[in-house]
Image (cartoon, rainbow, N blue to C red; front, side):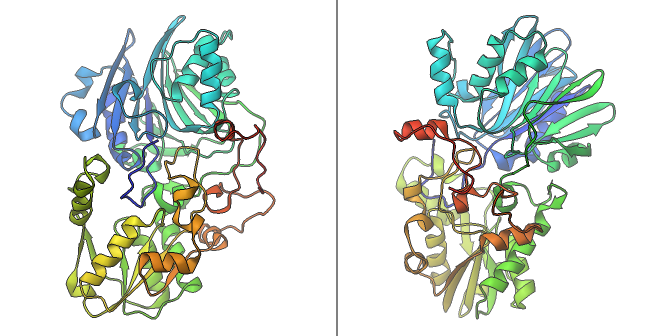
Length: 479
């Protein structure tokens, strides 16, 4: 995994889109991926089927840089799947860009994946010992290999058999010569929604992708569900015994676009309510509320509404600066950070400033922003996080530092306050986060996967336990 030690945000996961029965399938997939660009900016790819053969393009970089022009001529067909990538498993390389493709008996099979398989390393070793040859270092290829080796007759049976062997958090879109396939993990950690456009069907990570292409939202794919979309319509199957859904809380905290709807809830409104709750739990005697752009804006607005303290754009973010992790030197990264955020001195000078951010991971960027605000003349600087302290890493598709690198995992509140150089520091509570979503946390079976805040992992972490020399065991939800 790759971590930018100067970026205080968890890395985005991936975005996936699938379209079936539309004459401009590749164009719709590209537009959908553009709407999901926030979920991965490292690489992108599209695979289509035109009734006779598959077509595939994969590129490093952004969707708009690679999939412009007459796309339907380059990638013809009425069925397509696409993927935005950020490496959580497999280093950045052309061979690790999705969708991945294989020729199977009677069909080709393309596959794209959002998430992370927690037993991929163990399965990969087992498959290699049985003679499998891997072409990438992605966990996604494990599923492709399992499907290829299945002796089941029907494709849906082969896919479900493969899914029963893997563990972790995932949403898949797959494409054969006759079908578009969607699947979601047993607890619903990673999101997937179904839409309709004309006579065609769409699968996507978020509703904002449906909005981008003008598709009607139909429903969310349920946890543990496999959908098969063909000329006969949409068929639904269960790959696992039914169990309660437990989606990842970080969709609300950070990952989903504010204009998306998750589980029938507006992400923007949830984040505003997080700001309301944060103000109730951690008030501050200040002159101005300033968001850390862009992800801190809704919570800062909510804090301002609840507290009555004015909301101001005291930090201006440039959207035209490259991501800091690609800079080759430490000096280059530091310069990029200073170019990315600029203080609005007229708002900050002589004021008691409360900064509101969505989360604090390592604290490095937060510390730099605090100093920047002080240098702009702020009399006091206070900091609030609209999520609880992150004390555990994620293993389901969010690229985070190790537990030892997480600021809140190794420091008291006072130690963190001193490190960040702020007058006061406060975090939203776990119960407060649940309340902002509109539910009360069930201690015996949490309604959301909140492991980053509580350590309650919803699945076995097979690879992690083996890597640490630990015993392969079932992790309790209450560990």
